[in-house]
Image 1 (cartoon, helix red, strand yellow):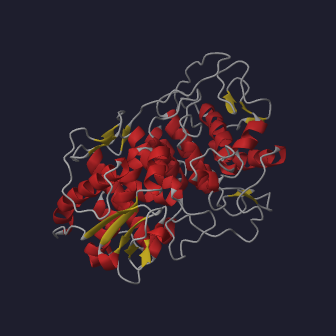
Image 2 (cartoon, rainbow, N blue to C red):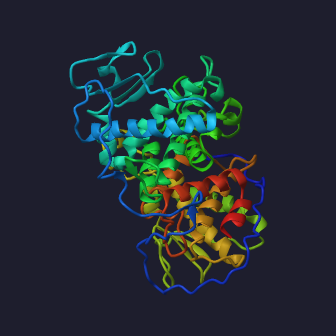
Image 3 (cartoon, one colour):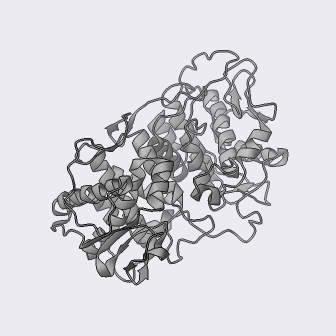
Length: 483
């Protein structure tokens, strides 16, 4: 985040018409382990839990793939191409009044093996990549480095995600004017459409229509979102740059749009509606920390002021943030931040949050390592904010341990994040901050989408959607959807 100079201005107040509910009693002096809660649905589909991946009885694809080695990664990749082809063979006639034409060429390569010339370059130049080449109508993927890393880090569905995305580019060129795509179309429009098309494909899969794959709407979609997070653009990149794909927040937005509303909505993505919502922007000239501040007592005091300003319209006293270890002596504890209802305080473990707030180690990410354990300053801020909004909800009589409480919490944190963009805010979002929130949301024991007991919503898809609704809509959707 970026600390700003103006300290007297008031942020837009968030409404607090959450509704009055009874607060159920919590166990005293206990620390929770973050048992996930299953609640609601995923864009109208039930929340499901099972191992996602290639079906045991999946047919063998009848595809001609150059240089395939038939190893485990290629097996999944080739099945993904066959599967997404089957999806578009149904989708294009049904919703775009055109027949599907299969991709002419498919290439599997290992950049460590002898070079293969492709699309004006060589496979050595395409390490850690997958791509669609319009001039050759070719989809290619790195089975030697990229796919093994994705599978190891995020599971089988991450491979399907990448291939579904690249196939989305092939569909753009088939749709042409129907997708508003031509030689002048910006990269970000093409990439957002492709992510959206991937979401529509996964919806079809989640509805049980795929011959090749099963995907659960909890752990399976979590793999998808985690892989989209992994292949995000660097913080501070501009969406106007050639090659821009979007932040993790932008990419998951587009995927969820396709999953919820279908491929026709994806084809309607254009520069105008992207410009209205895109979060991929350069660092501001006064953002001297390039998006990172140290988590210390001074910045926590600024955060306290900022949260108090943001939620002034709730008509209740916000909790005090106290650095006394992150636990509640007489209530349930969710370190490194806990809401203590009896004292209306948020207890924080400042050293632990400072560690969480270290910048993400991108090099370690790409090597499949844990790195320094940091997720960025906004991950730490959002964990504190998640416990702060527990106090606001408690003050207006909302339930803190119902299945909806975690969703409402994530939504209210999103509303706070959106409010920091208001003129006069003492804290401002920096490029990459929302991605840090998504990184926190996708952790197994996320506090950002957890109830007062630390029990997070089971589905990462639902967690991210709740944050997004609050960010774009303020507190109103938090009340309407999760009251």
